[in-house]
Image 1 (cartoon, rainbow, N blue to C red):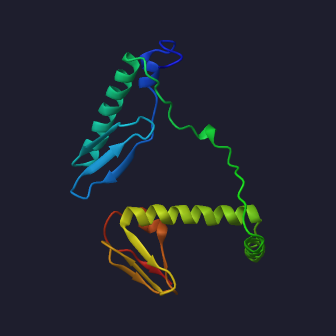
Image 2 (cartoon, rainbow, N blue to C red):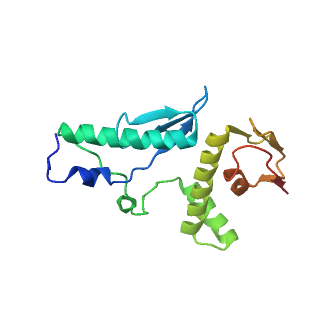
Image 3 (cartoon, rainbow, N blue to C red):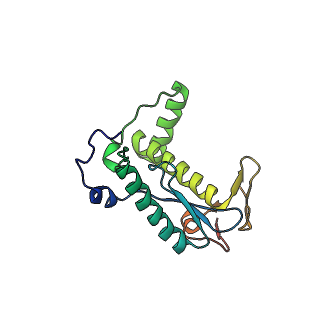
Length: 172
């Protein structure tokens, strides 16, 4: 049960903006979900249709929960995140990171932030295009896009982010 039952109007909840996650369905089409609203998901053939359908599902989910007096989770908010977290690492890794940051001419904080951002971005890209990176073999293979490279070549990930299909140029 909601502790603030009826203290906020239904329109308050309907006007909230929730992040939507869209996945391609292996059998065709798209699946959309709103993680904060458990079970709020839908499926459609096109992106336009799936976004219209998830909006309808969101409204129906909120109306039903409100009418039944259930808790309505609020959307994730950027203010929830302070930008700080503590990570314990081995001393040898700490030393290696400090040395690498000095070589790059940046602070340790800036260097680690760039590594984390690059790693997360790479993970997102690989998940989107089904990429497989064969570390140590000097070969990068991406299914569906026919991307091949050597250890001396690097993938232009910015270009990859903007592509849904087609050819990816390798930078040397």
